[in-house]
Figure (tube, rainbow, N blue to C red):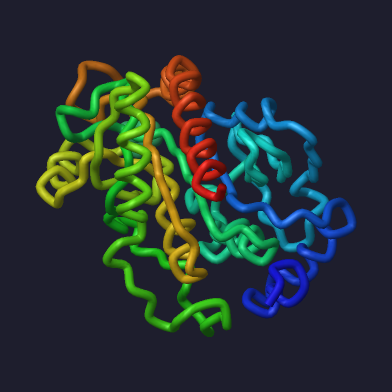
Length: 283
Ligand code: HPA
């Protein structure tokens, strides 16, 4: 089956959206990138781009968060055909979880078989201090919402395996690349909370005992959807703050954006290395 022709059958609710995107571009991106708070500017560096405002895409949920511009950006980076999902939506905005994962069904229907997700997260593990880049190796769904609830889409199994949603080999490769290029990284488990309030100190203590290394308000529904769709996933958290009670300060979204900005260049370098490696692997 070609990705562009019949793949909307996999995710029927993307049919009109795919038709609209196809009025702008016939590209089948190799990888979709969903970049988190304050981390979205890599799309600016893409070449040969096609921009589509998400407000023009039928069925696409609308972001209400500052710092989350809504558009799909198709382009080339490091020789790889990519689509950036700029302006992810979150459960805390009031969207149903099916809407939160809509962009993933859409990029899959457009042909992407890989997904890279980044997010801003609070550090729980003492190794995860502000400025750390953490490869996500597993997650805990503490929002208890699942985008696969409802009739099963033909795009994947009713009961998808979740024992390795973040491709372990890809993480190994990316970690080795980071190391070889002098970029320090950590690995850990990302715990998803619904938000929008940050956590209490007691909650963070509880999450620590549960095995969370970092906490945040995104990513997990997208990864569950991607796993259903058989996509290979890599996830990177940028630790923007110590989680509640582990530092001295109140948590402020502006600080989260500020720290995000300061590690943006390093994250961008890492993302480029990972893309370059994909291109090299193909040859
Ligand atoms: N908690 C939840 N989400 C976050 C945090 C946090 O401390 N930092 C960035 N996103």
